[in-house]
Image (cartoon, rainbow, N blue to C red):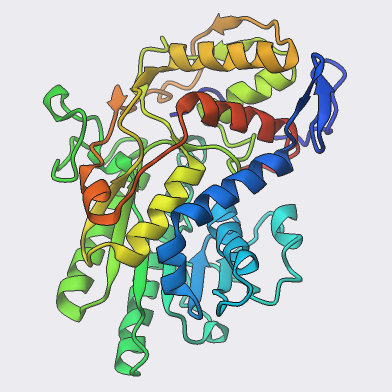
Length: 402
């Protein structure tokens, strides 16, 4: 779900017409607000607490994350390294991050480069995996353009990353098996977009729903490449015995999602922090359930370690299902409470004629499968998740184009 086209110029941490950036604790409206670093520290502890068994299983193993410099990589990478630090007597998880770093290595990842259990490999996933990778035990394929604003601009590259990148990782896994060094698990990031615009009787949506998807529309480059990716996974699991598992994310948000990403929550947070009016380019009636990224990342590691081969799992939250109008109301109330925000909501029509084409009216998962098989249990409420997100964005206003 996205809202508007944005200028992607860099912003200074403090804006004369907005509110002060929060890199450290500051006093606002007579009280101390948490810094972005505080938010991240709390989230990493939450993830590690939830993943005690999974990270213990990964102890002493080698993990490769493709696309590790992106949104989901932000906590995928940091949580594994945080577990190492919290359990310094255990054998560490050794982490390799593959990314093309096309816009440079992000500051949060640069800050981790001194960690002896982390190595960064510059690599384009549309090419065969580099020999320098060596043997790994776990693979996460998170290298993809996921924002509708950007995958519509780069449809071929989106399909190449989703399909060719996946195929190279599956082929690597087959080779490792023949070498007597089989991988322990692999995770492919699919998407709730594979369901398209579900019919009313299929909302909430179970994994068994086959979808209502256009194969030629403006979103098809993403939707259909994820669907074909799942087909590859199922068949490599069946034919070669590769322990490949599939996650279908439902509207993740929070720290790591750049303020320039173009999706509704970072867009609205930027407006609030800059003291601007919020511009809505739709009627605001589309509904979603939003899953905070700390809960989502815990779910993804559970799928990786404990999921069944060839199986897909919805990862999200079942309630509350809220409209964009309700989301705006919640964020503006937070902005007012935390920063004294006084902006208003302005409704306009997008100049992009395909802006809302094939955009689902509702998106809400059934997560019973992940709950019962994996012990997935999201804990962060939408109110708390949005509060954490706003405070994180307050300390992270500078971002390159997403």
